[in-house]
Length: 135
Length: 135
DNA sequence: ACGCAATTCGCATCAATTGCTAATTAGCAA
DNA sequence: TTGCTAATTAGCAATTGATGCGAATTGCGT
Ligand SMILES: [Mn+2]
Ligand SMILES: [Mn+2]
Ligand SMILES: [Zn+2]
Ligand SMILES: [Zn+2]
View 1: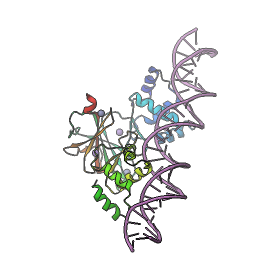
View 2: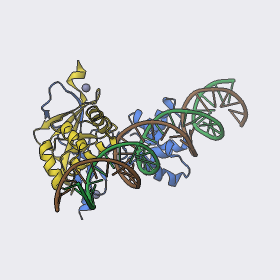
View 3: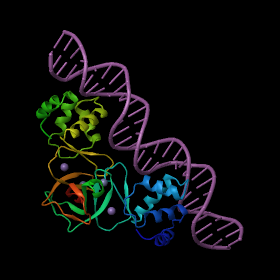
View 4: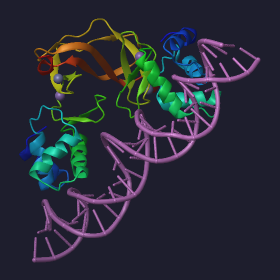
């Protein structure tokens, strides 16, 4: 995801308005590696801007996802997680605390057993216990 | 997942009863490689047994999952998919028709960028267009 | 055949997300 | 700076997949 300043330009160029609510979310998401849910972002946003609506948080997240500025990922944890890192990477999910960490694999694994399937992308989810929870 | 006959034994040994509804689901699931949702199973079950409840389908699926006879997988398609194949394998999901196919990878990919994470298992989801939809 | 714990199934409930819309506001142009 | 107008906000209703509940039913060990 680009910086709040760059997003401001991008939004205006697309005919979208730059509101205080959106600027706040730009700031909360930029460089955020915690893979927050809409709930969590709503809680964070509410601290800085009491009265902001959960609906608005969803709206802005969807706008950003549509623009390709962030990805929405479903790890089966009940709610979608949002990731401003749209570069190619994988995830490790802790079974204990639910934390999601970025990881990388050296090379995309080849699959076998299926002919004629045109692969667009492959996503790997590692599940286990994170360093914090192991102690 | 074991055969309907074996499951009948296993259920009774666990103190669970073997009802006609459960026997039907045993049959519908055994050797099923289509990764059906609860909805789809309910539709199939309703053909053979009109009046069966969706609640009962969920109940039985949860029982089987708890016993380790099948796995519940969330591909982010809106509803959970159920897989009676509990051996180590991966999946390819068609972006067009939503079909889920079993695939295999030669070797589990190593991840890097995270210290002290104890990996229990890794799941890979390939997304793209299946052979049927390509034509 | 009996007794009782397990099961079924309809309905209420829940959680995450989206639909709808009246009131508000950003941003452009005069 | 002011005014116009389309975009946005925010509250609430609705939706969807799934679970909680409980009265009526039924499997199954004795
Ligand atoms: Mn990430
Ligand atoms: Mn499978
Ligand atoms: Zn953890
Ligand atoms: Zn397809």
